[in-house]
Length: 395
Image (cartoon, rainbow, N blue to C red; front, side):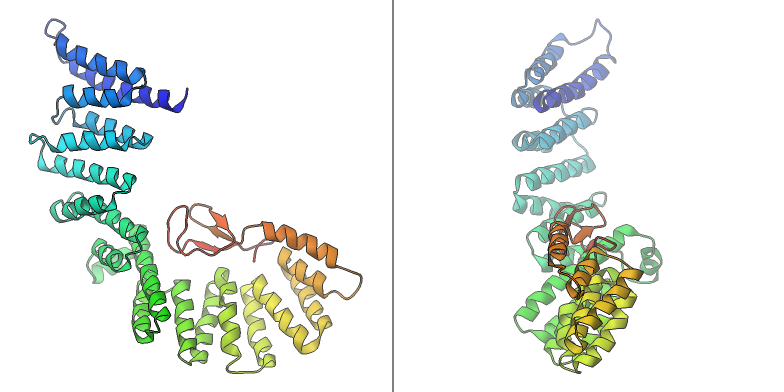
């Protein structure tokens, strides 16, 4: 069964269900034959794969009341899921034009119409509906705010995204503190807020507004103290403002406390250390971090520094010890490069080619993988869920 026919059958089933339920309440003698004829005509349109004509029939003939509202909404949802956004919008607008529905039911229809506009990319219209809904409906306020936040996030309007996200959080105080420890929804909002502030901080740093960037990053870390992005940006800012020691302390803590992100410290760590000490001190400082975090990238950096300081054999010996305790594909590539005997270039090139094809990062929420670190997952749109892949084939 193709998609269009499958959709039509589902739509027909919804209308049939309502019709049978309605007719079952009437005696055979009292059944309104003209009304039934309209519904069967609608079903004929559906089964002949003419959903637009079916929608016309439903709008014109199916009454709107508390009993039929679920049927109208189900039809509209089916239309939206198939991409028939104009038809879904017409159904919802038809419902809103009927004054017989209770206020809360009208709020429900407003939310569904906003979903139509979002699916159609008419975000300005959706925004107006959702703002009104958040102000007027206690029942749908949080869902309206959540969808508003997503709109502002997709439009990269970080100030507005922050304002809406803050409205979704309970008031500060002991009650919020007691609840937040086991509330995943609040944790997701806090994490999103932290990344919104990071976006603002990056823009401030790019404009050399360092005081403002520092203030914003303080907020980012207040909402998510272990956000590696906020820590990296704070270290970058410290380095920019001439405080490499503070930057090194932040990077050191990040590597040890959040092992999966240890490799991300390397560019900043190398730059900061060059301003405070010599290469020998660099090796002595980095090696324990690399070994404790078990980061392949950091271990290879130590090997590179050892080669410059003491020669290839010292680097090879170091990597051989690391391969014995925690073998990874990356360490094996490094070891073949430093081994003095034979010609390891063919083997090393082959392994590197294999490694180059493999993803480097993976989302722990949806499994999306790639070779670039995204703070916002392109697939599931969750903040801070992508991290370097660890293990034999990873970092």
